Length: 239
Ligand SMILES: O=P(O)(O)OC[C@@H](O)CO
Ligand SMILES: [Mg+2]
Figure: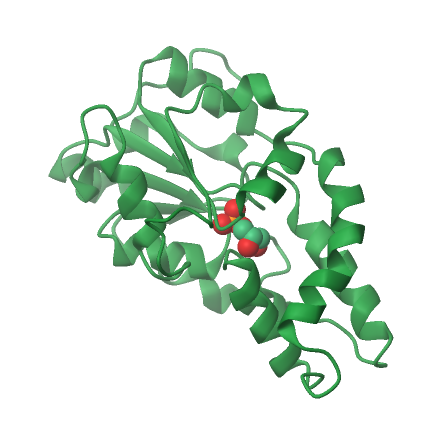
């Protein structure tokens, strides 16, 4: 785990890549809700150790983990699970709220001309539903890499999404050591490290602490992020 001081010694951060689900948008709860409903039909309960394995991954990869680890793959295929959850998610995603501190951080970095973008495991159709109430804020991103992007051959924890994102900046490809990634999921933190980047993890408090030993910094909320620790321009306001 490198600390912000290590990074500052190595040379500051010049570009930022945001994960989306669970980091910028409070959407992981929708996945959990729907998975609990489906598992209840099999008299099974959904727990956070399974959630930790699914978060951040491409839909079909997460679905395979879900049906196999829940022991229901003989009754429900990964593909059928995705079909069954779709109608419930279609209703939930348009109500997505921003995570605390997300808007302030995005606006701050954009105002200070720090290039920012998103690399998410979510595919385009779900991305549009989740962000439809936040278009103006998300328009501040230089680009968006989604789970169905042709350059993303493998989902997180593979580095494909973050490497594609680093390539697409105006002055890309950016040296991975100059990139700071914000993530909420163990798979995403691993993907960022596999890409050679620095990563701040903002984990759900229900995630087991054993998943917090790979990230370079752990925060309980984006509100607690101090840009100056990473060589980025400090906030001017106090809150
Ligand atoms: O935006 P991210 O966190 O990559 O999530 C995608 C989706 O797999 C939800 O877990
Ligand atoms: Mg996430």
